[in-house]
Image (cartoon, rainbow over all chains, first blue to last red; front, side, top):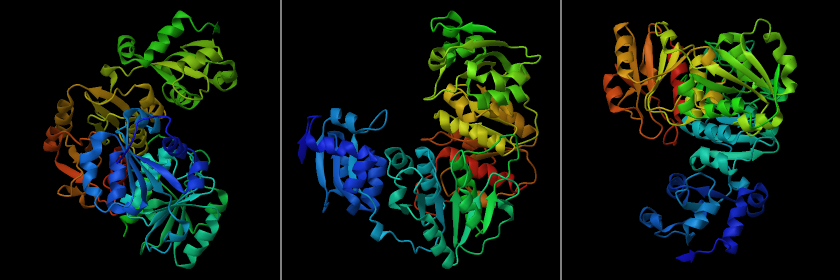
Length: 260
Length: 260
């Protein structure tokens, strides 16, 4: 196993650049941090891992995954871990992973899809991917104006769900929606407006639907609300003005899935 | 209106100390930041405000609330706003508010209660208060081991919901639960364990229930799970290992409220 001690090592510098979108796109890779998420990758999608980097206290837990492993393994110093880390207390394990190959994304999975239209906050975005995974969705499509799904803060909040469902960002969101509609999918928008359809009144006969959540401050884009078969709202029983978007998405996803 | 320019002003120093729990408890006050939440306070509970501090660009929006106002108003410099701020971009308006008076907390409201047992993350805690408000709950009780509900990050995430429902921290949580049970409340725990009761199988005839959410890493305390009439779990339809606690709380609160 190669050992890297110097914080000025060229490979480390290159890996550290993956915190920037530009370098993720140039290399088609992104950075994972933390044993929890790396274990998800090693368990579900080991071929996605290109390089594993760890301080020496991870050898034991990683060892069972190294049999037939196709990726490089580097031992790094705690100082390098601090540099690569995006958290307050790093656990000292990182991986360079492949970005999903657009050619290999499976858009035909016959389960619900979540669309994140102009979602700006990485924690919200990642949490919604994780919740969509729990709710049994096929995947999450980020609009071109949304945050990059492989931003490190999004990746942290996804907690490895990108290895369980499809996660992609599309320039042409309307083409995706049109294609889904042709396959018999219903398109649900969401509005903070009680002229929309109360979530309790929706009836569903199968999992062929797309749920679209809008920007934290501005809501769903008017053209998406327009294209939707129904726009849904979640009733407010108390005095809060609104709900956090990731909270609203979770309640609606579970409400819909539990109707089936 | 008194004008404060010096960042070394003694009153500003004292107010800045409210970021620490010790000083909040000594003075029975806490700090609010941002027009959104301060407007909620001025609208719903103006008597809770002791001092309003703002840069000069807030005069117009604040003006309607100053008629008969009982609180002091201070004009502060942008430099002072930066010092008091707990956010990346402050909007330059702050208030010193009273902590809820334990003598005045209404524990008899006949709506559901949420209990946060050892919740550690301020964003999670504040988001759950906001969601409980939206779901029409009477209040949120923090256990002694949970984060302080008036920590600045909790306050930011509550978005003013503390002016709509009861928010309190109790040393003797079991006394509260016993009292609620005597009033005919059902106690629901939550477990990440499918031997517990699936949320879909719960039947409810009224709003007399307490929902208890446990610590992010360790779940609900065994003694609370023991005291519960039922422990609930939320089914995972996909491959995520778990849900964020604020997400799980939201889905369960809405699931329960929508059964009524």
